[in-house]
Length: 177
Ligand SMILES: [Zn+2]
Image 1 (cartoon, rainbow, N blue to C red):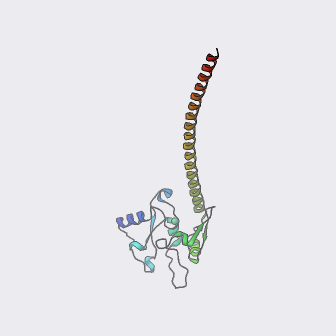
Image 2: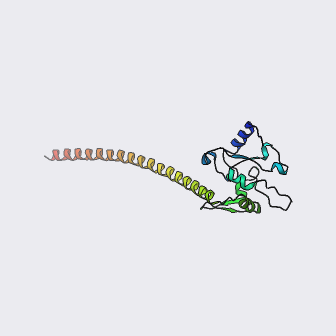
Image 3: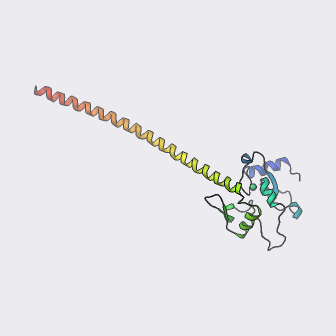
């Protein structure tokens, strides 16, 4: 299979440098991912841009050259055409739940609930939650700073009023004398 470098680059960019099946990124694996022919060449697929999928080594290995031979054979999810959310639901614990027969088949064929992948999803969820918490924490610190400033202004004002009161009292006492 020789796909021109510029096509490979366009496929990478289109996929945002992540496996289109399982979302694992180049920066997670430490290398570029592979190109997969959604419809395998051995089963009549071509090198067209639309038939190429950016795919991690594992998903590619599990997918192999699957292609439904008959119209009632199960179909694989095509991430180029349909969104993930149509076929899968991701649980809080990082496991996927299939929503359609295509989802069920793809999950089983590509082993999308393989343990390291579930751990990876869970990790990503936790990182996202931590990032959210950090944003909230920063907002809170900003709010506290603002409150602190307002308190200082109020304190100054109060001290000024107290001084005025003291001066007035002194004036009154002086007059009595
Ligand atoms: Zn993958």
